[in-house]
Length: 314
Image 1: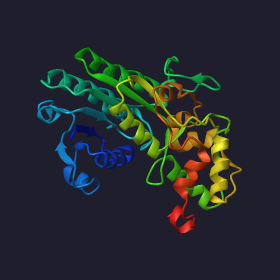
Image 2: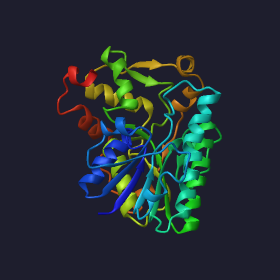
Image 3: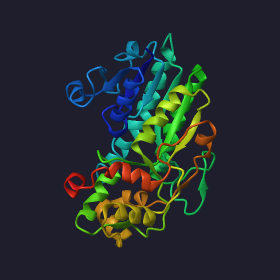
Image 4: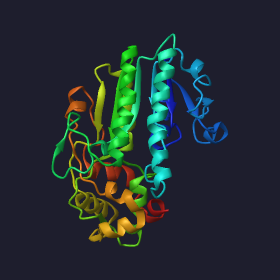
């Protein structure tokens, strides 16, 4: 059994990825901050290691002879209203932890084949109608800066003969958590609709596709560097809200103005309504086949087979 190390294993992507890897007969070790809490979330087959992302010596031995290390840990970008201290937490929880992981890998006698690190489409900033490939220039806002430095630290692992992948993830659709779960509330009260102007491009991806992409990155040696991870169907926020309304049989003509979002969320509002038209040509060319390339099918998979309002909205 090949051993895969995962940080951030109790998050939305992490806990779904752990299940997929176990089904594929990988041995999974989860690096966690709270082992007792994590054991209530993850399957019993998982090996747990406590680590606070400070001391390298605490986990060095566990990383020996691992096949791949997947680094998903990081403070929730939209978990709290941004202020100086929380922005520092968002940054350091990603950049500093990645730097330390690479430092530990450099000291291993038996290094992993790959280091696969989360990143985001926030790398590009707000880009309007521009088509964005992995070679497009980065943005200049806070989240772009986080992603740039995050990927820079991750890419440095290549000097030790380890393959590097940074997964620039779009908005993950799942009923467990995340954006879709939050967007259901206004639809419950027949007040659903787009955020901002609705004209901005909205890069989305089904939870089953993002976890499959991580496993694809583990197993496909041609998968290197930054990769865009969003569905191939390019839509606007207005398109998304309209399709969600159709699936839920609810109206979708209400709009949450940018000013309201700014009042509610502060600086983070500008990132929520950023426009990013993401190209996934690189991922498709190296052989990944999307399970849910079209939004209609993705939403029906998540919100059906039982479209009872009790199950969806509670």
